[in-house]
Length: 124
Ligand SMILES: [Cu+2]
Image (spheres, rainbow, N blue to C red):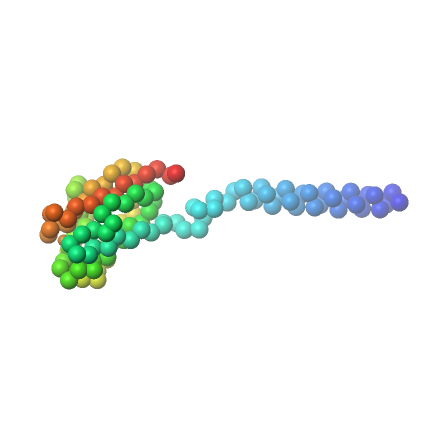
């Protein structure tokens, strides 16, 4: 009888220990950060407009522009040291990863009336 109680106690300790270890391991995982290193947002350049013209993203997001027009366009930050795609022909794309928070207005150098912005927020 004593032996059975001892065995059950050992079994209970093992089960509880396993559950505890499992929950501790789970707590270390960051559910969203682990799945994708750089989430991606797409902006189309179509009909001489950026679509959507204004986006808000989290820091570390990769933005991808795709020129759908037959006319060439550029994706040029108003402060050109930040990012500049150069001339994009039809079907060409340009990507930029935004690492710093803030508002980043940009335009097309060839058609300066084409204006848009990316707002980069801190994590959450
Ligand atoms: Cu343009």
